[in-house]
Image 1: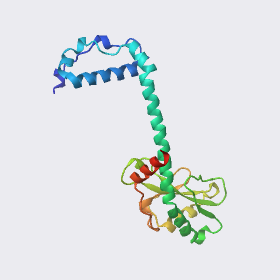
Image 2: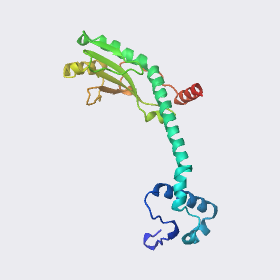
Image 3: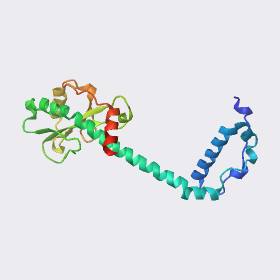
Image 4: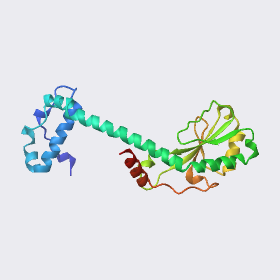
Length: 222
């Protein structure tokens, strides 16, 4: 198609004179156009300039109060439901891989550098308190985006360190050497983040089936 030869047609009757209804106004008219193009596109295009069936501002205001308001609430409800489902999904995955955190704890405790420190695995819903002294906490963290995949998910090990230990660079280096890791990431809070497939010093559990997890949670909450 040559854009220079394109001819634009418009319908004056579906112009709006106020800005307050632009979203609803546009959505409804798009719905009308899609339907007309589906049932009789040729006739609709030819008579587009005089087509009388477009949504007017008054009708748009009614839609805002009724139909589209209802659809919005239903959409919000579904988003909240999925958010809750994903939270439970993450908890199940963290619980499944929890033994891996405990194995990391045993590896670190075998290094004399960490004597005098409390090293422990965080429970699936437990938060690390950085204000407590001399702590190293191991957390299973899930990637929320990968949970949408029906085949595999991604998770990582987050190694949290108490605030009073953050300046100890030798401690951090000892953690890296004990776990034999490369390409680790350290965020602004000092947490060391290791992707599950980059940590080979411990065996990993077989991944859960996300489809099975989804069915289990739906049946449990039905």
